[in-house]
Every structure is written in C-alpha cells, then in structure tokens.
Image 1 (cartoon, rainbow, N blue to C red):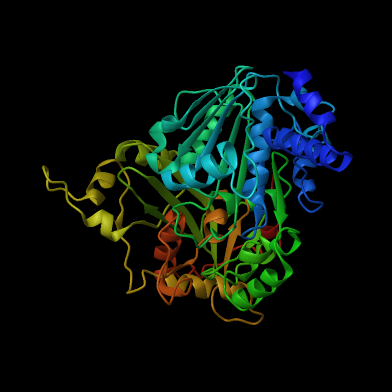
Image 2: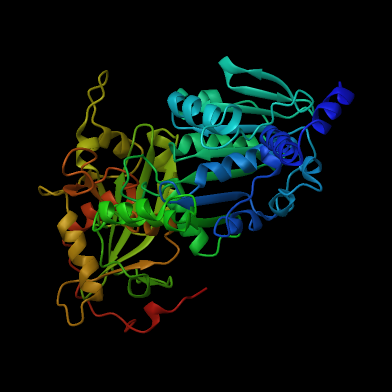
Length: 495
C-alpha cells in the first residue's frame, strides 16, 4: 500500500506532489488538531496561571472572547495526559498545566441539555464546527464514545463525562473527579457538589463564563462573584483571568465595531465586551464604609441598653444580632448568631450561651414568623422561644420593616455633623459584614426593564440584616445615667 502511494506521488509533477503532501499534512493535523492548537497572546495568561497550589481557575470574558474553546482545550489535554503532547506545537501551553498522570476522570458541566449537546459535545469535543474537534478520533487514543450518555473513554483509562446542571445536585454525587470544567454559572449547590468530588484526589475546578451574573443576579447565591471578591482580597486558592472580545483576532474588526455600537451605554456592556463584572442593581447600603463602620471589639458597659433580635427559620439559617445603645443613642452591633439545621429549643439554648449571661433589656423576634401558630398545639412560634427561656416579643415594624431606618443609621456614620444616631459594627461579625456588602435591590429579569432596579430588596442572604432592620425600627434611645468616659477606649481592642 505504501509502495503504491509512493509510486503515485512520484508520477505527479513537483507542484502537484507538494499540493498532495500539503493535503496529507492537513488531514493529519485535523485528526490531531489538539496537538496544533495555539492560544492567542491574550489567552496565554490563562494557561500560565495554572499553578499546582491553586484549586479554582476562573476565565471570565465577553461573548466570543474564546472562553469555551480554551476550556475545551484544557479538558482534552487533561484527558490525554502531558506525554501525549511532548515534541508537539501544543506543548507551549500544555507544559504549564498541572495534569496528573492518566487515567483522569473529568466532568464538563453545562447549564442545560441543549448546551451540552450542541455546544460542548458537538462543536467542541467530537465533531467541531469552526474548528476540528478537540478529542482525536484516532482509535489508538479514543477507545469508545457513548453518544447517549455524553461520555468519551480513552485508551489510557481517562474518561470525559458531560453533565447538565439542571438535572439537579443528586446527579453530581458519588464520584472522585480530577478536573471539573463548569461552563457558565449554575446554582451554588452544583458547584459545591463538584468541589466535594475533587476533594479526595486533589482535583481542580475550571470555570468559564461571561460575568453577567453579579451580586444582583437571579441565582440564589452569586458564588462566582463571591470567589472574585476573595481573589481580590488575596485568596490564594483562586485564580481569575479575563478576556476581551476586542482582543480576539478571529473576530473581524467590522464585527467588533458593530459590537461596540450595539452595547454602548448598556448595563451589560462591560461584561459582554470586556469580561468585567457588572453590578446591574445597586447596593442597598451604598454608604457602607468598612473604614468608618467597623471598629475593634471593646468591653461594653453593662449599663448600656441591650437589645437582641432573632430572625428564625424553620429549615434555613436562624440568626441573632446583639445591639448595644450608647448614652448618646449610637448603636453598636457586638455579637452575632448564625446557625441552621436545629430545632427551636437547640437554637434558644445556643443563643443563651452566646449571650454570656449578660443583661438583656429587650428580646425581639421576626413578627411574621413569631406570630405563626403550630397546627396541632395552636401555640405561636414566639411562645416556643418563651418556653425555651427567651422572653421574646414581636418586633414592631412599619411598612418597610425598618429598612429606611437602618439606612439612616448607616448613612449617619459617614456623614460629618449628622445629628442622627450612628451605627458601629465589631469587625469580628463576619456574617453580618458579608450580608450588608451583598444586599441589593431586586431587578427585572426580563422584558424592556431587564436589569433595572425594583423598589424592594433581593430576598437572599439577609438573615442578620432583617434582625438589624427590626432593631433600627425601634429607634432605641440610650440611658442617660452617669457613666465613665469610654469615648476613646471603645475604639480600641481589649484583646
């Protein structure tokens, strides 16, 4: 067969022979396209930041910036193993990846079945569209393709499995996974399950997305944005890299111009074009300032008025917030309680322990939850806390449940000369700080008003803030008794 091919090649003219050789070489490259794939200069930092000591690698970029193609390249390389790329052009980027020796178990997570089938499975892995498939069809490399299950089995023992996030977290249990590629942002519970699957083998998680999901997004918890905040704060386990569609050499300049015109001035412009996080709906406590609101813990006088507010939940988080009112009327948040998966008597016991036997003038409880009655005993939920030793009463609230009052307290702290009482927060109240920095107005998710703010808060991560609002709705006054001057000592730590 080879001799016949050589004879046919020799019978051609030099020009025809070169053309035939180019065609043969092209077919060979197409069959092993992953070995010849080269990221752009702008995409290369994504590969070089894959350090062995990091866990999560996030690539954010505008539409058509090349996020998914780079995710597919890394995934295929993880399955094939580093040795497959030795002496190949792709070694320039594969060498930076901390790929374990095969076999490797790999998951690809898409938002839904259609994305898995049409984009990831067909366009990127097995058939290709704008480029050949990333997974070589060579039977010496690829042992079996299970089309119905979206699985690819390799001769070296590795396996790629595509999973749909909308199938539920139960479908993400039980396996040990070396690499998870998450394309776009599912609910946090899916990410949590994927994280658990990588724990026992030191696996990695790769996320590629356009950052349209911010702190005001429609998902319950914007976990990618939270990771981004940790990264900016110096978190060593997370790495973020961004891509702009304007840097993609494969997008024609005329199309880039059209994109700039289309998204100019739009709330999603920075995300769509440049891969930057956008905050479509504003923070409710937009005057919050860590430098002014956070103070070091100090020993608060027992003579100060003391109020504890409980925001319970039947199955979710039960929160408690301790407030102290100075003689000047300023409010100090000194302690928090934040637990779940306990019954009322257990919560009550833990809250009393957390109170450290200090005197409490007023115990408040969420009025809606506290007034609900048990179907069998007809006793209110507030009575359950009373029976457990906490003499709660329903928090008196107005139409906005104390939202505006709480904003006034926060604003007064940063407003020079304000005569309104101020609020200060002990800097060890981590859950309260997280909530107030992520508390946003709800927004319209569809229609002409998409992305614009509504006049009510997003119901998410607000347990301690509800307690804070109930507390501020009281507009509590401090006792005017004579006390030692603590104006300087209260801003200094006693630890």
